[in-house]
Image 1 (cartoon, rainbow, N blue to C red):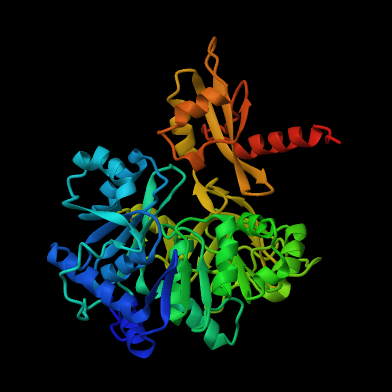
Image 2 (cartoon, rainbow, N blue to C red):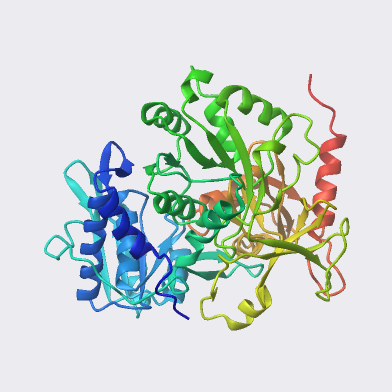
Length: 525
């Protein structure tokens, strides 16, 4: 299905190059790329991709950190009709191999720092025809520009429309096997348009905004926030990776007006030495997600940042923000501060039971979202797609309920996903890795509340008779098998793992035991 008259990343890039050619589009480590330059360089990238034999529907992978070059590559893929597959640079070689193999990526652009990882797995990737090593961006160049230097910068028309695929971001299911979520151009345009039509400004992106991109571009949070700012024609200040001290410096130096962050990131920024409300005087709106904000942290943020706040609820499958707790609900004592918010304009929410029947307000069930930005599919997984995308509704992994006035309160995650500092972590991945240790008989991984990160990873381990192993040894064992951020930070050694009659781990029981044990420990004075 193609609608060539609707907005796409291709048409918007050309539009900005004509209408605001000298306006800064991307600022990274002091380097400024205007909209005219962004358009020309992404055109050259597209011509280079076509010359390499890629075209409409081809998968192009990127392994590296964020920079102006990363977004030139993203737009270049769109202009060639290809689909960008970003690879999380924090993954192990085995995890990265799965994504490259499953996606069928034919070309990989990789920053030199991550080339050794690719060299280890290249032989096992038959579809990967070309690997392009990119020097890290710097004053002397780098990025993909040397690779495409001899290519023309003329405009291209790949014949794609708003419903065509442009991005494939990998997430995971309850089995722990990463799934490629295929998103269309429309994912980056439907929400701002719906907000404008409704006259709402819960979250918005303006041409005059200076937008700090502090979340990684391999996630929908980072990529989506950039693309919304890009679509509006604003200036995007891109961090290669989040460091709170640097984030504060960038906000002050570039007079940043808006950003998106996890509550833990906000806490780190307001606790940086020497910051005052004057440091953040340019901010007009901050969006946060991945976890609700505590009332105490909200008050501190309101006092220090002095701007509007909006909580957002989304998933890779929704393609963009689906639910928002608007600024007017952010005040100490707000009765809905613990909620995820209300359905955004143009979106709908419902709660269903196990049979798919819609439940009335107050009853807990599965959260379902209607959003015009929704995913096209899981890549080559028709059964998983049919389970999640039922008609026009996304059936998400969260359990919750709606109030009479439409606020969504989340109660638990149906798929047991752990969300630590905005990163999705899946128990099955941890359990599989730990289960390979010779001293481990059984293991259950789960998320438990953490004031700073939202969730912490708890591993409940049953050791084999006569065997010994402590957290230090098990962490050493996980090194190289599991990305560092997925490793457990809390450990319990137990006699058995509670399971239901079909053998499924009862994580709720383990979580309740853990919280009860913590509550029973006297506070240290």
